Image 1: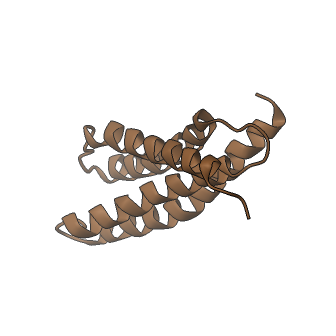
Image 2: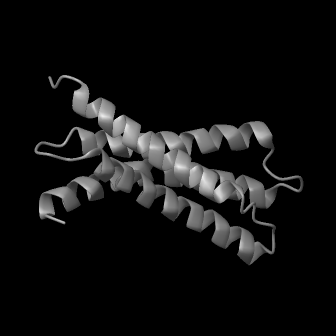
Image 3: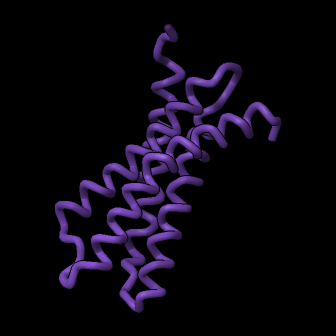
Length: 128
C-alpha cells in the first residue's frame, strides 16, 4: 500500500477511534458498574456513536487529496470497529460475562458500511 493511502487510512482510523473509544469506555464502565447491565436505550445510543465515529473516519479518508478509494474508507472504519469490538469482548470475557457473539459481525458490518458510504459522500461533495 503506498504511503499516501496508508496515511489516509491511519488518519481516518485515528478520527474514528477518537470518537468511538470514549463512547466504548463509557459503555463498558456503566455496564460493569450496573447490576442490570447498561440498558437497551443507552446501549443503542452508544453503539450509534461508535458507528458515527467509523463514519467520521470514512469521511476523513474520502476528503484526502489524491485517489483514496471507498475501500480505504471502509478499511479505516473496519480497523476502528475491530479495536472497539476487541475492547468490549476482552472486558466481558475478563469479567466472566456472556458475549453477544451474534452482534459482533453485525456491528463490524455496520461500521464498515457507514465508513464506506461516508467516504463515498465525502469524495462527491465539493471542497471549500
